[in-house]
Image (tube, rainbow, N blue to C red; front, side, top):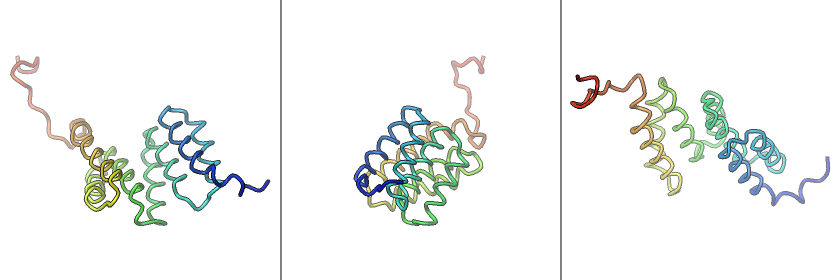
Length: 150
């Protein structure tokens, strides 16, 4: 393989392009971009966060949580991995409480305002949407004008 050192400064560009590809549901491009970034900087866990993010978008929650947990074993203070792990776990009904706790801890303890915002937004999402559709959520009472009360 040729000398990759001359491409080291492309790491961030490849990584960012990978996240954009995930957001555009282009799994093939995202995978190639994250793999290319990993070749340039194999020790940087942002490429693994990218793969976890891809799995999260595909709702392959077990794979996503495995990646985020692996990152946290290597870097216990990685707040992005914590926030994304928390979000991933809240989407699984049997891990909802654990995920919420991780998000609360991350929102409270993070020094990074963007990570705080991510964790708080995820908690909002869980309250508004996940808990309402979760089997753990209390059943909603029909309103006076609804078809169920007639």
